[in-house]
Image 1 (cartoon, protein in one colour):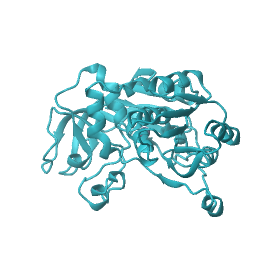
Image 2 (image 1 turned 180 degrees about the vertical axis):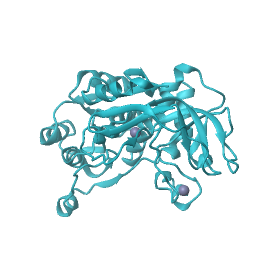
Image 3 (image 1 turned 90 degrees about the vertical axis):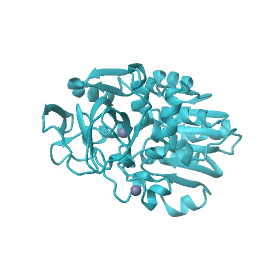
Image 4 (image 1 turned 45 degrees about the vertical axis):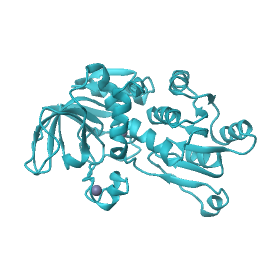
Length: 338
Ligand SMILES: [Zn+2]
Ligand SMILES: [Zn+2]
């Protein structure tokens, strides 16, 4: 089969690779219905995270099970399934606490921008839909695999409750899904920080009540003005830079919650500065598996349509253009169809 390999900065190739097969008795092999490019794929693409060898790419996926190993009990060939970017047994203590992305047997999926994918720990990782969903639902189901699951975790970790005032830092696909999630959790006021018109529009569609275009200290000042100098109950950090992290913490009210789901790059927190903020901090790789059953339900019953974040759809073999479009911010998120 041909699949996606990153060779170095801005060098994405779609090339012949070995087709995955069952390696361990707990594996499943699935035929990908749709996959996509993640904001986090852009860190190595841009050379910010070094690429030392040709690296197969992709960790967001859904599709139909082709084959399972002999110890797999719940996943069955023919089922349509969605899984997280982190595999999990769903039984170890970390999984039981709801942190499946820290499963003691975790592996990270990294070859999903391909027609066929091997998924380890299939029983604990994959969630089947009831029947094979219609094609128009596939983008939204794919979104649950990471971007929505991560946005949902951001809102949950920031303790969003009915009536909350919420700030979302970052207008990438995860931030936009954070807005959608905060809306579902009953937030009263959702302030999206975004300087881009098409993203502001989608943020509003997903439930944002206010838009703030300023960033950094200016952005914090605007949030303070809007909250009578108090700050927001819940702030979702969905970028991963020093500026966005401090913007998030400093926009949070005393006793409020800052979640951080943007992969940190060069972020450093000073203990004493943090000490006086009085904020709860909670973040990390989203335990998407915890939320998958609920998110799949919300998509299937038509409550949410997170698939709208995909504003570019390409055949998988055009994957390099998919990266380029996101890198140049011509696309929010690229969906790829094998
Ligand atoms: Zn991702
Ligand atoms: Zn586990």
